[in-house]
Length: 428
Image 1 (cartoon, rainbow, N blue to C red):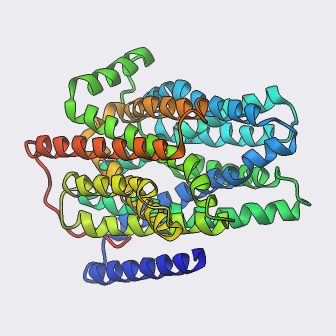
Image 2 (image 1 turned 135 degrees about the vertical axis):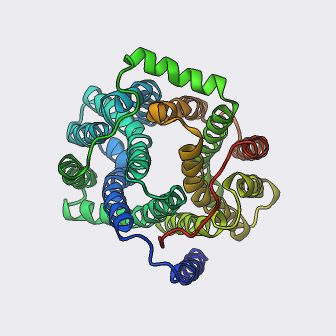
Image 3 (image 1 turned 90 degrees about the vertical axis):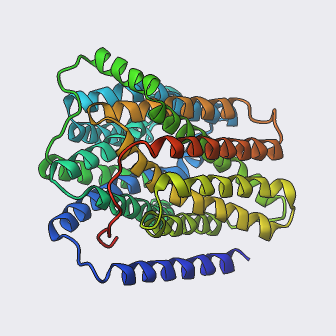
C-alpha cells in the first residue's frame, strides 16, 4: 500500500512541476535574480540537509548509549526549551549585528552540537541539545531574514520572492528524503554506530558556513538600537499591530499542531500492523513538495490571505480523519493530505511574513513567534500518556480551525493594506 501511495504522489509531483514549467516558459525571468536565488537556495538546502541528517538517528544514538526513555524525553525537551529561550535573543543579535553573521553562528554552534554526540555523557549531551536548540532557532529565522532583505536591497521585484520560498520548501522535502538514505548509509559505513550521520552533518555545516562567510554580503535590521530595546520594539510591533499578532498566532498554532502530528502518526499507523517508516516518511515529504509546488499556482491566481483560509480548513479535516475512520488507507491519505497542506503553508507564511513584518526587527519578531510554539511542544512532550491519541488529533483539528478563523480575519484587514499586482514569477 505504502509503495503504491509513494509512486502516486511522485507522479502527481512530476505533473505539477511540468505544469509550472509550461506556465513559466513564456518568461525567461531575470538572469541576475535567477543566479541569486540559485546560490541562496543551494546554500540553504545544504544547511537544511545537515539538520535532516540528525533527525532519524538522534533517539537511536541516545538509546545506543543506554539512556532511558525518560532521559531521552528530557534531552528533547532541553532542545525545544533552548530554542524557546535563547532563540529570542538570537533574533535580536541577527538584526543588530548582521543576518549573515547569525547564519555563520548557526553553522558553528550546530557543528559543535554534532561533536558532543561522540560522548556517552549525559551532561555533555545536554550541552549539545542546548546548542542544537539555539542553532535551530537561527535556522528558522536568520536565513529567511537575510534573503528577504537582500532581495529588496538588490531591487528584485517583490512578486518574485514567492518563487524563492516555493523552491526552498520543494527542495527541502526532496533533501529530507535523500538525507534519510544518506544517514542510513553513513551508519552502515561506520559499522552500525549511530553517530555517523552527525559527522556527515558537521562536514556539511562547515562547508556551508565557509561559503556563507566568503560569498554572502551582510545586511541588518536595526543596528543602532540596544539589544533590550530591539527586543522591546519587536514585542511592541506584535502587540500594536493586529495583523502581525494574528500572523504570529496562526503560525504558532499550525506549527504546534504539526509537531504534535509528528509524535502521533506512528502509533496510529502501527495499530494496523507493521509500518515501513522510511516509505511513510518519503510519502510525507513528497506530499509536502507537491504542496510547495502548488503554492506557485495558487499564489499566481489569488492573494495568499484568501486561499490559506481553505488550506487551514483542509488541514483540520485531515487531522479529524483518524477520529472518523479506522481504515489504514484512508488514514494514510489524510496524513498525506495534511503534509500537502504543510507544503503550501511554509512558502505562504514566508510570503506573508515578508509582507507584514517590519524589516528592522524581522528576525527578532520571527523568533518571538516561536516562543508559544516551543512552549506548546514542550507541554506535549511533558504530558505524553495523559491524553489519548484521538484526543491529540482533535486538538490539532481545533487548532487548524482556529487558524482558518484567524486567517479570515487577516484577509479582511489586509484589504485595507495596499498590495502590488500579481505578475509572473520566474520559474522555480
